[in-house]
Image (cartoon, rainbow, N blue to C red; front, side, top):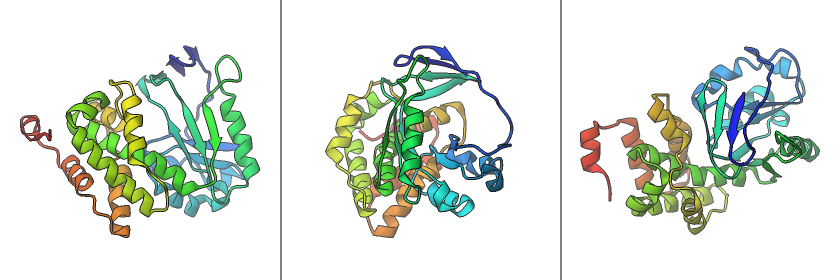
Length: 269
């Protein structure tokens, strides 16, 4: 795997590849998109995983329940990663953001196992012990919803309008602000603190040419994680009676995309 990174430099990592897990491991990282999750899990049989931790780096908030039903609660350690990266060709990854941050959690996983894995991940730099910033967090709901609260507005708006974050936060500022407020309200209803002002400040600090992974999938004609992000947000809002008209409208528009000419004429300002 060849990596180009402004933070970590350019390097190549040799990997041993196979089509399925063939032996027990200490940790199995699930890094597919949610649209490929079911197929990926068929390649990781519970009896082969052994006592290894299953660590999903997936967008959304609903997947831990699916994984625990298949592998058992003590094996599942949900994680979130904050990074902008993309695969530009088979075996080639570009890391564009100046940061790479990982939060590990897991309500039923012994803290010692999480701490040990965090130490390994933090020491995975290409030229020494400096890898991504890794934290172990006790509150699983807060961890997953912190990522969701940031990701959902970013993904839905950049994909809906086909523009990078810089244009979203200027031309579509009003809609971004409303969507951030809706997402924060859902997050709080799910027991996870969220501050819309902090979220907006984070968007403003990002490079203007930043794109969401959902937007990149749309540009490449790949399936979208719309249900795992937008759908999960709407389902949580419905469960808690939170009104989310902007989110609901965006999900509907992305489910039934308009023709380019019609889309341009109907963009919100």
